[in-house]
Image 1 (cartoon, helix red, strand yellow):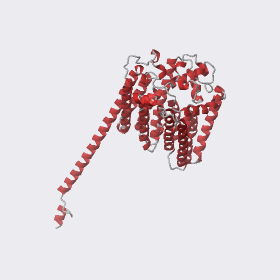
Image 2 (cartoon, rainbow, N blue to C red):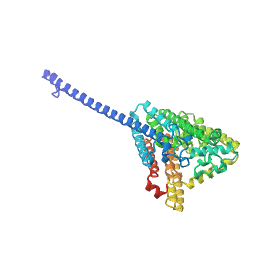
Image 3 (tube, helix red, strand yellow):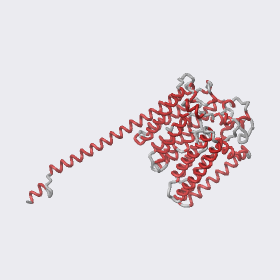
Image 4 (tube, one colour):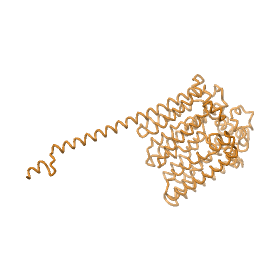
Length: 476
């Protein structure tokens, strides 16, 4: 009896049957591991295909832009040889249909690459980001005339003694640069902060072509530096730095419209990203100063500081809030002194100019579409006021949640930026870049998907302008 129990066990299991069960379990685990490995390999291949698609699209845009009017600002058609970029004017004309196809494929590739970023080698992602930026830097100025407005405002102050906060570029209509200015901005004073406007004076003596290269270089370097800061900040936050970098640095609106057009929004984002990083590193005074400095580049940056202040209270009491306020106050005093010395009282007109440019809107925004494309200006005005009210309410609600510790401050600022984009009276493609660093660093992963969706929607709206019947219907 005892012998039988020792051989067969209390439940009648033999050593052989137990061994078989262990073998089956091992095989099952082995199959599961192999399935996971195959899935990981498939995701890696898919992500690499996404990176390759982005690079191919970037190369096509860079080579063909000089001959493709749909990729050029209106004021440089046909493109002068001096602005043609490294590849010159020998590339193909891909026409509107080609632009639609390339930008659509670029967005799909971006969504795929970001979705698989956690499986991709860091080197592959970072090299792709650098290559995309280089391709846009080597291309002609793309899609927007703003890069010429930057030069015009700088020339007005540095070469002609005209205050760019009081006069539009029409004040230097005799300058060779003036024909490149977009019609909307010919009589509009600058809407940019005194830090950017003052720094642009340094570049005023450059020729038109040299100025384009300079501003595009600043945008490219600022964007790459922002990616580096996001990478390091993501590590501080315990997030995947590769995915964070991919979300920002591979975004087609940031790369094509931001770097390709040399927009100063990327310089603003660099300063904001630096401020965010140092706050995460618990250097609140430097963070407050940098966030205030970013508003001196573009007023949009002012949205982040209130959330950092509210988050400081939620994190560690009144000390961080006090340090943030000290840093921001010192920077504000320096900005006021700098602005007064360089522009006198002219910068006081900045808010009125921003309000004027926003009130005129553009067809990409909800109120702008109602006003300019449906011809219902009063309705568009009311819609704009209603949306502005909704934005204020959303910000107040988000700030309250951050203050009470119910919401992370970066998450709150990111959702507030989403609200700002949705309710803006003027929504231009590169404005989506404002959201990307915050979404990349957010603990709420829904913001990553939201950023991709917003990118797709805004790009889709842009592509409507290339469809002939849509152009006729909407007057694009």
